[in-house]
Picture: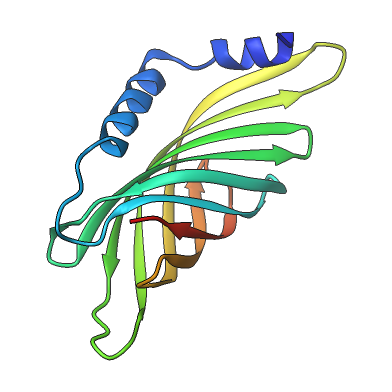
Length: 165
């Protein structure tokens, strides 16, 4: 196994492993009557400038039009590998005569950065983050969103994806 990848995995502390187990449990939860499901997304981020891909789980409504959407994103590029664990709450606006629904949301994040400095001199760090997002989703599953990061999250992400039900 690549020593850089091994070093990156060693930076994953116990809280991140616990979050991963929690996310796995959510992904395996039985479906409810409301629209929910596992989704995949891909796009780009700025600062760091990367290609981003990930997976998430969107719950049914836990309150009036509010759902929980934990997810994991991996960013690649710019000599940095980013692993972001996002714990978002979404508010979906009612649009009774349209298959499209706008949404807003945000939540805390755990960001793991692995910087490749060359010659095996990698630097890894775990940082807290905060995200704010807005987007639009279709009843059939397609969605697109912009995400703005604060604290130590990437400054900006644009992703599009599909939620499976």
